[in-house]
Image (cartoon, rainbow, N blue to C red):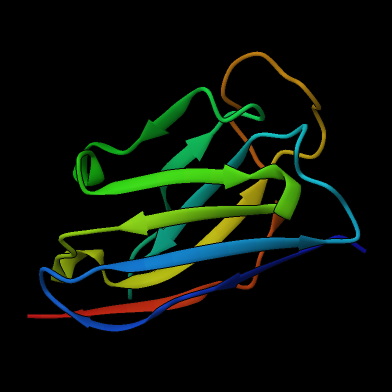
Length: 125
């Protein structure tokens, strides 16, 4: 059973930084697109960022561009989300996701088939 385990969430003041990590067990992630999503209280889950299997392409939701950076370390089987200049509206549960159905795919996936349990991020004003 593949598991994606997020870590690094916590409480931070506005303007602060956090780095989230997503580690995969039982499977390597080097051939697959990976992404981060978040869900704020009372809202639907939304896309935050994604990265290609090579790490050469990334995509972000407009609200985090210039503040968040997604990256991956394939030898460590880990994907990261560096979050800088955090705002209260960034508060929510952050989820790691993987498209394990399409190795070495071309183009960002529409759907992801494997999800982590989430890590909470709270940004105070």
